[in-house]
Picture 1 (cartoon, rainbow, N blue to C red):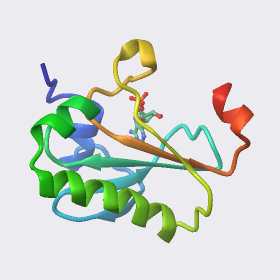
Picture 2: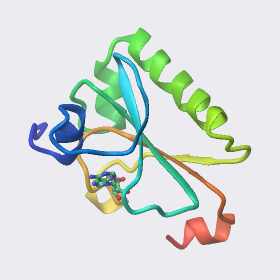
Picture 3: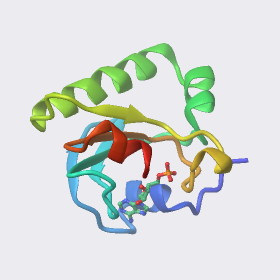
Picture 4: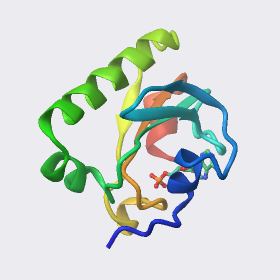
Length: 116
Ligand code: AMP
C-alpha cells in the first residue's frame, strides 16, 4: 500500500525543500541528495504510485507517455550525452523510497555504476 508520508510525497507537497530542476503538472525532476554519479537526477511523477509496475499499470497512457518523454528531454537538457536510467522495484532491488521514480545517472564508467 502507498505510504503518503514517504519522502517524495513530502517533496511534492513542498514540505521538504529540494533542488528542483524541472516541474510541470505531471512530474518533478530533482537532484539526488546522495549522488551515485556526477550527474544524478530523479524524475518523480506527482501522483501516488509505489513503483514502476504500479505506474505503468495504473497511470493513464498520456501520463506514462509524457513521463518517459520528459525523462529523455530532461537528460538532454542537462547536457547528459550518455546516461543510464534506473528504477529500482522492491527493497531487494535497492528501492528505498516507495514512490515511483527514475534515476538518470551520468558521468561514471559502467563498471563504477555496476559496483554502486
Ligand atoms: P531508491 O533507493 O531507488 O528508492 O532511490 C531513492 C533515492 O532518493 C536515493 O538515491 C536517495 O539518495 C534519494 N533521496 C532520498 N531523500 C532525498 C531528498 N530529500 N532529496 C533528494 N533525494 C533524496
